[in-house]
Length: 147
Ligand code: DQA
Image (cartoon, rainbow, N blue to C red; front, side):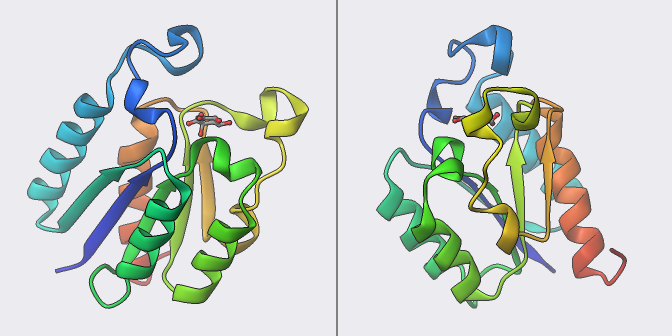
């Protein structure tokens, strides 16, 4: 059975109270519960992690090799700054879906640049917490040879 890693970057632990007009009122714990329920129903493995530290995210991407079949990454603000995350993704040769709750292309110009996009399978953004479920479906579709 496929196993996925869902990785969340800085400030996403504050979901629910953080700028609800942008990110909604759903907490990261709510999102994790929904993802775990979905994974159980699909019969797939799932690890779910959040860190505010770039190095911890890098270590998690490295450690995913040989353990997980793909990664869903909401890198938060590191999306727009981190060459290191881009290099890590390019190095592990695992399919990665870039995820954002908000539509980063409709926001400030500095959010339009993503260091993740060139090394990602694809990007899902603008669908709020529902994006996590969409990303699981898209990654499974890819792993099963569909997309
Ligand atoms: C975000 C978008 C980023 O620009 C921002 O820095 C975040 C959250 C999102 O999920 O919409 O922290 O990744």
